Picture (tube, rainbow, N blue to C red):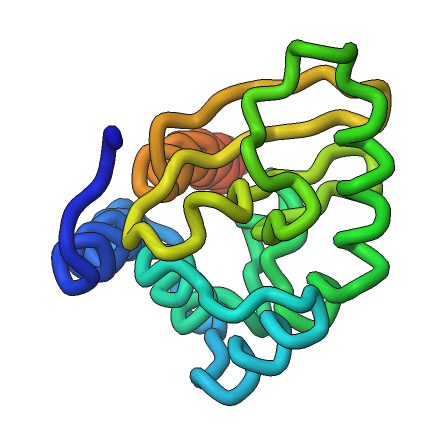
Amino acid sequence: MPGDYGDEAASSEIRSIFRELIAFGMDSSLVCGVGDADIDAMARSQNVSEIPASLREVYRLIGCRADKFNIIGSFSVAGLDDAAKRIALESVEEIPAGDSPLKDPGNLFVAVSYQGEWSIVVDGADLSHPNPPMWGVSESGMIVAYESVTSFFRGCAVEIKNSVDRQQSRTRNF
């Protein structure tokens, strides 16, 4: 499986990407993470038994307040609950028959939600992997593949850097 490596390697890569963002100019005081108890409570609210190590690290960094990450979607563990999962499952039902890459959609985990229009999920069959593939599912049933949690997070980092660039450019022009 792409991106399949140990828990520490997956967590370390997420931390490295986050440090790159701070070095680039993202204000770290505008984000805060949550502890394992909150992450475990979120998992229980979605009725999943485990969270991949890479995602667990994301929530430790930005699971409470995500600031610029909100342009991608909500990473807040408070909002990634059973209601978010119901919305994601409704979206999965819209995927045309035979087109879904999900092997265990009933046990999927909603990792990021964007106003109910998009859900970024991990297939229930992949939850035991430290850095599994992710799937973007729209409310109309359109699906987008992401190679792994770390590649998705790296893509988010590109958007954050673009946002920081725009903000710094506006500041310089005043």
